[in-house]
Length: 471
Image (cartoon, rainbow, N blue to C red):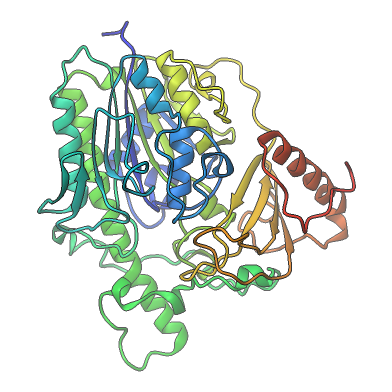
């Protein structure tokens, strides 16, 4: 089979933080089957989301474009599913294609999955237990646990194909998304105290009011549905926050454990079918997630735990094991997979193939990555609209605090604010140095670099931001 084009199997989860994967040094759990892919292939230590939110990230992965190009800026701006994607290019070149699980980019005419030979997807967020699936045959309820069912459906589809037929299947799980409902089989796991992250007690002393407005505090914003049971009566505020952290993390990690088991099922299946060595097998999450870091849950912000995506990839026939430290983004995946398959990328794609990195060829790393979160002041989490630029050492963030009338955003605007972090001196991002005179030159250089990157990508700076003085 060494001469054939690779199969592509992308397993994507929702809200699985890299620091809840033992290959990334997790202090709270182990993930042996995800780790196996990392050990046999490549672990990406600096893969970043360009908009840390479920629907926008999925659209960027699929289309190889930023949110302002593919049109999916918030959770309620559905995708035009007819637009070019890496899947449409693969299908045109002879691949069989399938999409199973959490689509979460809208449904109905124009928004249901397109360019797939087979699709069977959850509606919106979907359910953990006895989920509803939508396919070309209509809507149905499937008894069982979603993570197992999604794996079953995907493996059944692959089994229907001849071994000589190259295929691409997207296996997209709901887990470990809120409200974190684990399978009954895991009820005795993670019952010992789970370590607190070092920044759990962050007092936000140097952060802007933009960051402080977010309704993502474990101490205050987890609901009864999230916790499953009320906190013990009479606990002081700080102790109640610790109780809520443990309760949240138990279920979150149990959901992850089920995902890990199912990743192993896919790996074992590919081996049994004799296709593992010739398959690009990816495990990733659509963005990062705060696990009590800075006292938060959820994502949305440009801070590291939210921005960073776990990504491990194996393809034993052509990719040797190792670790990739260069910065890449979810916009880059489409062109990378197409290059691996020998299929030309669509000219509208905005990413950059990192296939040369995987093959040990010359590759000039990006100097910085651009990020933009659009869903300003939404009803649930109140996170502020912002964009920013991250280099290997520094991170500049501009909270422009304006929903621009986009669906999913709140109507209120707030004064714009800046933050700047030195990731070498302050990897935990506890000290905003935007107004520190020692960083004045770096600050202005980053403003200019971000402005230029926005121009290159065709995104428009917010009207409140003045043109950088260095340009």
